[in-house]
Length: 468
Image 1 (cartoon, rainbow, N blue to C red):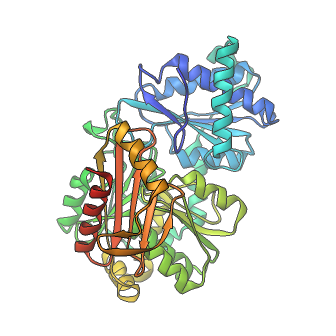
Image 2: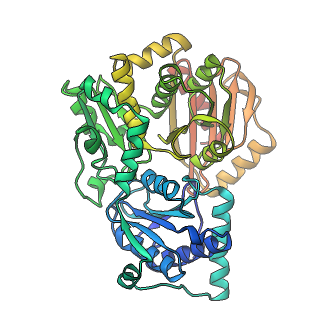
């Protein structure tokens, strides 16, 4: 089987693609890479989420690391992905591995690589890992491992509490005392994932869906509106002022505002950028992906901050955070990261910062967003995913590359960005993005405009362009 890394790691259906044999091949390739790059002597951090067999998969990775003479710091309990990333940086480890499939459905598991800087593996690194896996298979190279108990006795595997170190770091980045004094009625929904208990340990917040449930209640642990109906209902009842939701490995954030409505990642990004710059006095550059809101462009312009637009995937944001003085970076999926931490998305930290904005202003999330929109304008955003055959997708790609439209829905296209899909921007800033999935027979259509009717018009036009 060919192993391919996606936007953040290798994932597969448990017992079909994600098997102990395939995991062992990827783990061995990781140790080969660490030895090749001179990282092995710095050791490896290994963490895992609450998915089916995640602990057993993590232990297998640790056994293979030990078999290759690499010291392992293995989480003694479930921990969020950003906790693993932070541990890599704090301990000066050569790399980290997180066993998780993030927000994917319960039947999946996955393998995320974290590099020595404490962020997601760069594209050149994952490409090299894919090549090492393929080479090892072609050459018939086996896997070196050491039995778990024996490796623990020898000191090659050490059990550590990854969450304590991580939560201590977050307490330095957020004014927890101000949040406590504000006594904000808040409710957390970790969606049965690895973030369970994080808000509770820091702020004694109430939580729902915090038990161990590898089926995640029968739905994918992705903090989007359709998956947060119970959280919306509870906040909408008036008992709480805000709801905070985390994905399965707690590196993504979703929220519910004081009205009980879902508060999108675009809105969260916008609020936090203002908070970091205006209230916390931080500055730097801003990074967003091609599918993110124009509100970020307008705030960056207002503050005089350099703005970068990257392909989708936080690894692209991470690369800029390593080389540029980035204040904040974010993507549509709810992955957001800030300066002074790690070049990594962190859902728990973003949730704490949202509470900090409420404590600082005395205003709910929706009220704060309305005030920003009163300054920069109001925006409507929608994404539609639709099925497309591989043949139709290939024809569409060729047509858009060779003969992209210069007018859409009767409007002249003023600029384009084809770095990840096909983004068409109009003179007033409205935009349309047509982006075929690289791994599924799916066409993703995105649009943002000042009026919801124009969003609908542009999405209909996108369907016509695609011949759907």
